[in-house]
Length: 67
Image: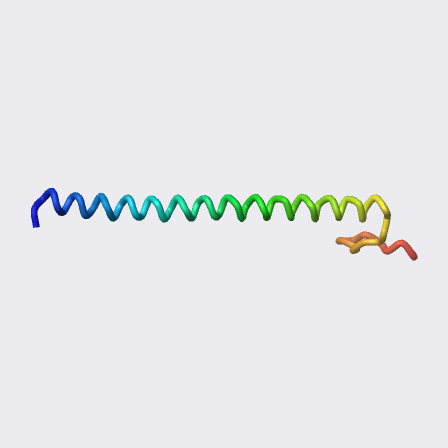
């Protein structure tokens, strides 16, 4: 195998790897956008729940409201 053929094969392999990585990054970008939207929705939902005073989880040394 000549040096040029060997280099061409390596370049082809590297191009394929870069294309695969690019696809992976693009997919992950879409997934992150979806997850960010969901987190924002959950935060808004929790903020609404807190403003309505609809009870909640007692955290730490907080006393329940019936004391």
